[in-house]
Picture 1 (tube, helix red, strand yellow):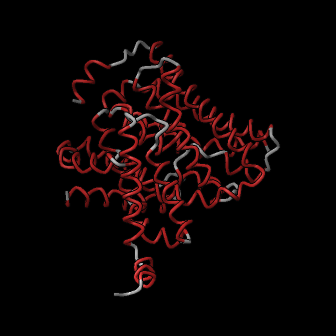
Picture 2 (spheres, rainbow over the protein chains, first blue to last red; picture 1 turned 90 degrees about the vertical axis):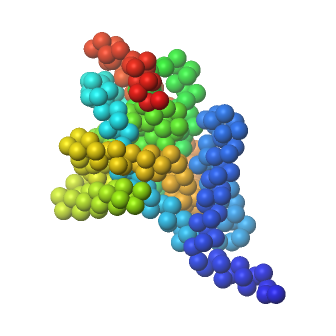
Length: 238
Length: 126
């Protein structure tokens, strides 16, 4: 029989190990979330990320080697974004009727997300480079990275802040909105989509299909508005 | 399933091409989703074809963020001494934005007398 180390080094070079590990880690996270009755703090993404980060650290695997396998999952983000057209279409009559609340909540949510993030960070004396990366953090990752790059920010740091914002939004939205006593699924979903892009939308879809549809439209509209407003908001703080 | 996935990828491809060609700051997949929504409105039968596949992909939307999330862990160190203020800014702004957007939505919906369609919507979703 061959040496385990030899087999491992063979397998670790291909995409199979890390693709499998990603699906298993998420299945564990999802099972725990289900067992916890979808309690928002038990977030499947967060659990899977922690498990995989530990595994990479224990096996001394660099991230690029991991991504070699995980990229197949990552790639599906594009088709999934296109597929958001399905819940949008199913809920189109409600979305149309809600045009006014949607536009008002979009403007307020987008400005508050950027204004409070920059305001708090600037008050702590955070460096200009970090402020630039912070401004578009509520927009979906490809848009946020594009915005940060055009105004001279680091794409890597922006990606980190975008993902963290999504996880924070997905974890905090349900307890926060319950605490506020807000039960309107349209308002709940839309707010999470505006503030926490795709990860928030994923959480809203778990809550209810209608919340998911409103989250999807919130994410799409805020991607556009953030691109327009981020340079202007930054002028106030730089 | 095969046809539905081919249609979805075609719309993504068209979206990516349009975003590049027009140099607009919106990602290709978002444009693709907008175009697909327009196509559903023009051809409702297309929506019936794509609905099962679309809903299957979206059922595990969270999973798709895991690889990027793992990448974040390795870069947390780059925040250095700014980690704490940035964490406060992220949590504070996300809470503020969710609360402000949800309250605005509910207040404007009430002002324009748009009732919460919980009841009839529930039946349609089921």
